[in-house]
Length: 377
Image 1 (tube, rainbow, N blue to C red):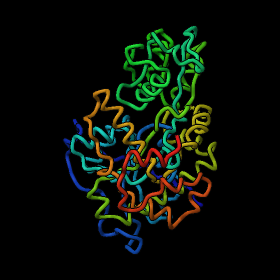
Image 2 (cartoon, rainbow, N blue to C red):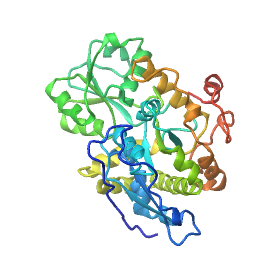
Image 3 (cartoon, rainbow, N blue to C red):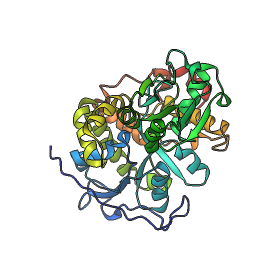
């Protein structure tokens, strides 16, 4: 298979803020919308500069989108999910990869739909293998006794998935947010804060725990994963795009599923690819991070994915970060990935089967109580 690389920058609007885009509509070439057109269908996509989002550029590099007769142009990596959603709203890209920021964005009016996963699990209620707790020297934090978090200054990004992971840990320990000091810290700054004593504990996703261990003498990883929260990451597009180009969405998801399977089977090669697409990424760090990342590469949809998003929406609402009453049924569009699952089962043969009670069909309506029974913890 050819491994040609395309990396095309999508121009950004100056001063763009969420829901204040400079243009609308998709970037797809309507004249070649389909495999029978005069050439590959041109679409654009965006991803955040993070190890767990590397599947999109891997698919471009490995030629999986070419196999689906798609000419995918990638935007420069975004710094955050909010930036990616800004670009989607502005019509600069047709697809983005985004996690928890999708909740607030949807509530603010962006009419997005979730068509697949780039990280998560369709077989269980919670998965968080890419999350870790790194404690500074002499802090006394013990994974076997989470009550040792009490009184500690803990660095997280408020409203992000690492903040929610902390809430999960505190709940398990029987502690509340008033028992710790939460220090709002961006992931790239956590290692410095830990080194200088600004925080006692850093909680964050890969590769930041790995780099913190290398940069802070005496620091130790006291906890990795544990199933405290559902880690989510979705492939998103606009409702208008999904309705106008269902065939494109299906082919896009097929290529992403191919990319995910290749990464699960070749984690070291995937790490090598990450060093090319994420500037400044160390190969050894990428290899360590990819060992955890591949455990969450499940592009399928089931009731468990609805349950995951609903759980996080409730947690964010409890913290006042989003409005309560988020209806996940409005934002999932499962038909395209369900079709891929049905037509290309070999792309998922190495994954654990979806529990029969959690399997869904087009038109599925989420009910939390039913989903909780269907999805193992």
